[in-house]
Amino acid sequence: MPDTIVIGEVLKPQGIRGEIKVKPLLDDAAEMRHFKRVYLGGKEYKVLSCRCDAQAAYLALSGVADRDAAELLRGKKVEALRADAPALEEGRYYIVDIVGCEVVSERGERIGEITDVLPAHTDVYVLKTEGKEGMFPAADGVIVDVDTENKKLTVNKKRFLEVFAEQ
Image (cartoon, one colour):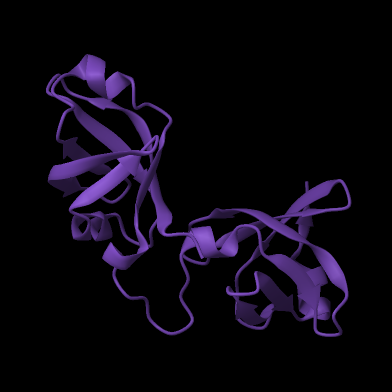
């Protein structure tokens, strides 16, 4: 497991005082308030303030004093130390732990690899398989087991095939 986890992505500068608008990659944007320091492009920043709405978090960071400095952060991944992250309930996972997981059937048949997670009420997993790409919901009955340490996600193949949408 990496020492850091990706918790968001910088969308754009917000205002003229260096604040950035961040798309959170957490279940709730308000969880961004737990982090007192973040990393962007390998550089550590102290979080001076954080405010949130339903779709985004707005961060003021040390060393980012104006809109020009904030503009340089556009598109960067926002990372935080895993140790600073709030503990998750049983059966909940950070997106960084799901991306890259091999998807297999209950019989061990390889189906593909998770390349992205689209956060929603029921998260949608993007799967790449033999040159094709598709999506499926992370719903009960579809996912049988998640083993983040071994990067393996086991699905019920019958239910998976019912809900898998090829792109």
